[in-house]
Image 1 (tube, rainbow, N blue to C red):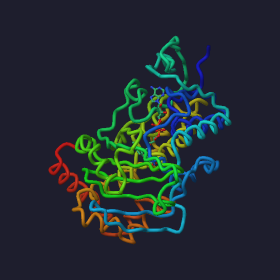
Image 2: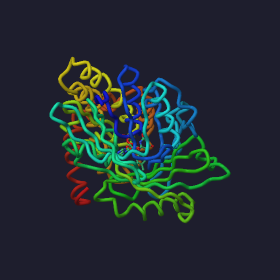
Image 3: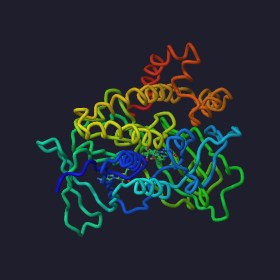
Image 4: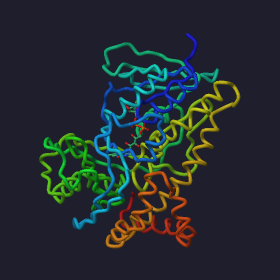
Length: 401
Ligand SMILES: Cc1cc2nc3c(=O)[nH]c(=O)nc-3n(C[C@H](O)[C@H](O)[C@H](O)COP(=O)(O)OP(=O)(O)OC[C@H]3O[C@@H](n4cnc5c(N)ncnc54)[C@H](O)[C@@H]3O)c2cc1C
């Protein structure tokens, strides 16, 4: 059988978007996921306005809360309420969001196969790729698939990057989340709002994201420094919000991979998108935006390669470096500085009207991290050295991060 044009491994937002964009260009695409759909994934399910704007269809069938404000809290639980009066984020459940994104890909012509676990990926001498795929149930026979191009969209612990020899992110954040059932609806003070709190964790924060009939509650921080403290921090945060930790269900932890400069995300006919390319925003932890943005960015490069007009997918790497690179670098620098600040200063920053205004514009896609810092004049020119000092301070305070 001749090889398929493209196999996309992983049907999260990055994979389904890449697959949909490619199919819309007339490319034959097979989209594989090891899970049976609909499947859930540890995630707050927050889709910012700037993220939703990347999609050529409406997300309202899967939106459970529309967020226009936030309750900002320090570690002692002192809070400030900020309302933007405009939509900031749509809160979804990933099981529903991801299934919906896959449906859109299928409508564009993508062949979706769930319950298919990619075990290995190798590049053959003729430049095409061979993937060995086992049914998730374990019982069936291993399948061997061939493709001219491969898109690795298999998330934070993906196999495609490792199998095809891509370099790995040097740093990971980690988060633990749970669901708090609210059969009578979420509390009034949280409707249309998220709660964001400074957590008692190195490099992290805690959140409440209200959905239709439950609250997604979570804490996150730097993996090495915060990992062992996540569970007690989650329980303490839950209690501080007036909820009983014993009522939490579905506790799940997951990594958030953070890119380091110079990471390779494309070689020959293979590319990585979303978490597989470690594109999570270091300051906010937002990953769905970059997952979808990278899924969109990879399509023209794959299309050109398949048409024989380019020798590899370097165009995707360039596009990503140009469009997302500076944003991730600035976000990382801000994250370093923010987490090195003493708590009262960090909270004063978080609740200041100026920072709130910038955050509103950012999540709505009306500005970028780069423009925000440039507008602050002296901060822009000193941000990089400040971040280096802050990183040093954090390392001394917490050891490995
Ligand atoms: C606790 C937590 C809360 C978060 N909250 C938010 C939030 O509110 N908003 C936000 O924007 N971001 C959030 N993020 C980040 C966000 O979840 C990720 O950045 C996003 O899911 C990345 O999408 P993706 O498509 O790259 O990968 P994923 O969504 O992880 O999808 C990868 C897919 O690949 C499949 N797969 C993996 N290995 C294989 C294999 N070998 N074979 C076949 N299939 C495979 C998996 O089953 C999965 O379906 C959060 C992360 C965490 C951990």
